View 1 (tube, rainbow, N blue to C red):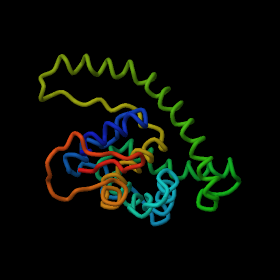
View 2 (spheres, helix red, strand yellow):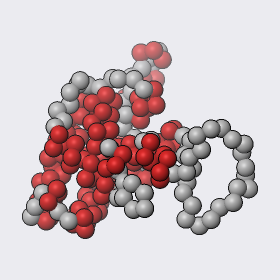
View 3 (cartoon, one colour):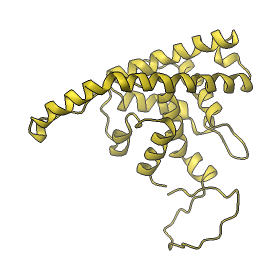
Length: 212
C-alpha cells in the first residue's frame, strides 16, 4: 500500500479527507505556526490515545512508533491556523470529557476505561462532523461558484470548519503508525528490494498485509 492509497483508506475509516494529507505527500512545510504550542505532557497524552487506538499485541503499537511526536509535526507543519487551534484545544477538551465520564484524567484511566471513552468519543465526533458538513455545504457551494468565475491561478481552496478533534487524532494515529518504520516493517509485511509481481502468491488466514 502506497501513501496515497493509505490516505484514501484512512478517509474511508474516519469519514472525511485526511487533514494535511496532500501536504504530507508533497513534503512541504506550510503550517500556520512554527510552534503550535505542544508540550511534553501533550505528546505523552497523544501517545497514549494512539496506543489505545492501535495497541501493542504480538507486534508494537502506536506508542512504539512515536505517533505523538508525529502528530506534533503534522499539526505544526501541515495544519492551518483554525485546524491547529481546534487540535490543540481538543487535547484539553479530551481530558475534560474523560473526567466527566470516569472522574479522572485519561492518563489515570485503565486500558479498558480508555477504550470505552474513545468509543464514546468516536460517536460524538461522527455526529459533530455531520453537523459541520451540513453547515458548511452552502458555504462550500458559494465558494465553488466564485472560483468558477476566476482564472485557474486565482482560484482558492475552500476551508471549512475543522473536524472534531478526535477525528484529527485518529487520522494522524493511523497515518503516523502505518508510515513509520515500526508499522511498515513489524506490523505489515515488507520486502526491502523490488521483486516480481505474483498474482497467485499463497495466503494464509492471519497473514499481515503488505507494505510498499
